[in-house]
Amino acid sequence: PKALVSGTRMSFRGIKDAQDRHDVLAYLRRFSDDPSNIPEAEPTAQAIEVVLSPEVLALVGDPEYGEYLGSECLTCHQQSGSDQGIPSITRWPDEDFVIAMHAYKQKLRPHPVMQMMAGRLSDEEIAALAAYFRELD
Image (cartoon, rainbow, N blue to C red):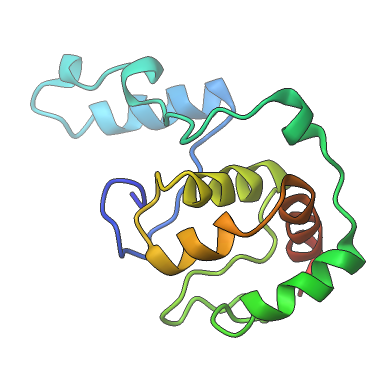
């Protein structure tokens, strides 16, 4: 939902388990006037926003360096993980965080402040932020 409607706070990373996806679709078909119109996984699968090299995705960030860099992020995002007004960035899986930041960096996500902030970061700095915010309470 976030990628489709900019400015929304909706967030859904999808359902990774194939059986769980199948069960949800089967449940939804029970309420549809045209059950055959509810597609299987492929047409509704969430596309990856940006394709990154395996080397970038394999970077292991330094959480202490991420804490240093993260002070600027915390001027807007809440350290508590609250999403009142600004989406939470805490406890994300590293890969999701890295992909999102690179989507801003490549201007695929439409937020000028985030595009500017991500545009200044190296791959290693993004990995460090991901490591820091993953563990932040």
